[in-house]
Length: 287
Image 1 (tube, rainbow, N blue to C red):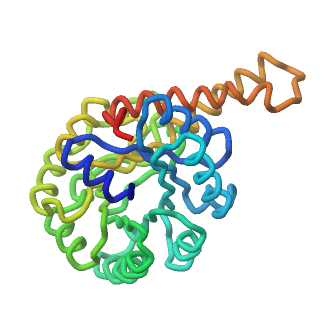
Image 2 (spheres, one colour; image 1 turned 60 degrees about the vertical axis):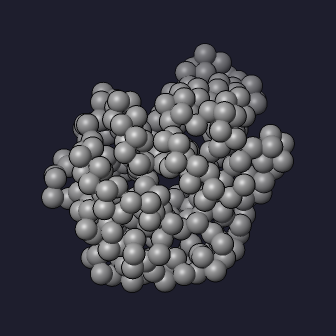
């Protein structure tokens, strides 16, 4: 089943598919095991840096191997692709969807570049996600989150213009989230009224995507899904769980040098976070 079909189903039934980012095999295993246990479709995400570390072709082949083994709807997305050239490499390698992040560009320029990339992706039958209004932060633990000003949020009229002129399948919008998570794990509430206005403006012309899902209050996530969000990106929480578990295990097993004896704890930590998110997004038993 194509990723477009699952997003359409999620849109109609008011649930969301999680995108979980990876840069190594252990995180990959944790995500897939969670999806298999809860019978949920998932999107595996790799940013440009993550995909350079893991390898574009390697990420594609790992996804296919896990699909065969678990008979699951797993989809591979290039997260925050910054150029046509790198997106083209990902598509040629076999990615099923890509995200072009031109949010730092002026709207007119963003539309022009995104339109070119969307036309290429559609010829290749690859789902394309665009983004407007820069979403701050980075996928790490932050002492405190960046200040989010209301004037920086996505305007409904701009969202409609962007969708109609580019022909994208999905749109990542700025509704007050940020990449990363505060040390207190209490990110600010998001602007749900703005999301409602965007959804009302664009209707079902594009799937709505929430970036910066890590640390976002659960009540806001649930409301955002009801208001049309069908894909939610999670990265920082996975990185934090993986690193914390690995450090703890290495501390307990000082002197151990056999990776397969201490890495399973990190795999399990990632799996636990993904299971929690799948349940929050109500995507279990949808595969």
